[in-house]
Amino acid sequence: MKRIRQVPGPLLTVVVVILMGAASVVTWAARESTGKSSYEFAKDIVLPLVSPLVSILIPTVLFYVIPLSQNRQKAAIELFTSYFDKEMKEARVDAWDYYVTERLALPVAQQDLRLDSYLRFVTDPTYDQQVPKDQHTKMQSLGQVLNYFVIVNAGLEAGLLDKTLTRAFVVHYYLWWREEVFVKLRSRPVIQSRNPRFRPLWFDDLVELDKIAEPVAAAGRSRM
Image 1 (cartoon, rainbow, N blue to C red):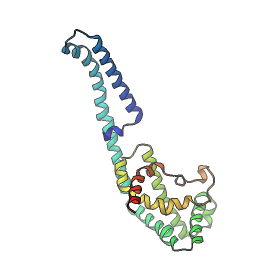
Image 2 (image 1 turned 30 degrees about the vertical axis):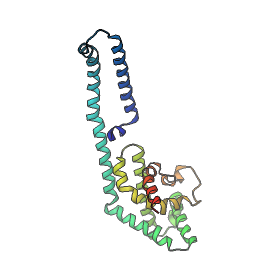
Image 3 (image 1 turned 135 degrees about the horizontal axis):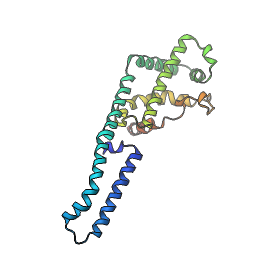
Image 4 (image 1 turned 90 degrees about the vertical axis):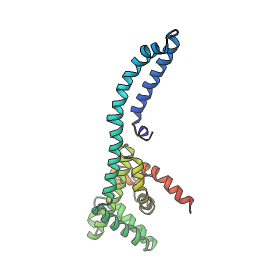
């Protein structure tokens, strides 16, 4: 059943239509074949109809549905591995320290200034020249993390990732980043343009990630 849910909609629709058509033909033939024995009906009507269907459906399952499921699982595991590799770990730690831990220790006005500075960095090509080198590195680290979640969301949207495996490793971390970084950045008035040149993909809701994260978030809220 799980693998059936992972079959692309158009393919599943074609299979369902074929099966329904075959069932209709069998039903009609059963009404019209009065006087025939069950054996004759099966030999003359059912077998000639079912055999081509089996020859289509079995290869489809073996060479498309099962490999598709395995590819999705492999892609999810690769994303899990990349989230914990050395470079990504350093970026996550660096960005979290600067944009969450240290920022929350600042007065509110300075907290907002740090967020606004990053938003200018990703939307204003000339602002890059005004950023000190050490701060530039931290901005690059944050961008690496935010864009990672954009890629995960895009993979889910395109049906390229196994949702169960993706949920198992990413939701816990995504909820932290969503509440402490994504939401805070989106609340700032710096970005008004809808032009993708000046509006990072992560500035809008990551719909597919939110879908798989919401049951976990709701369960957490119910325990509070």
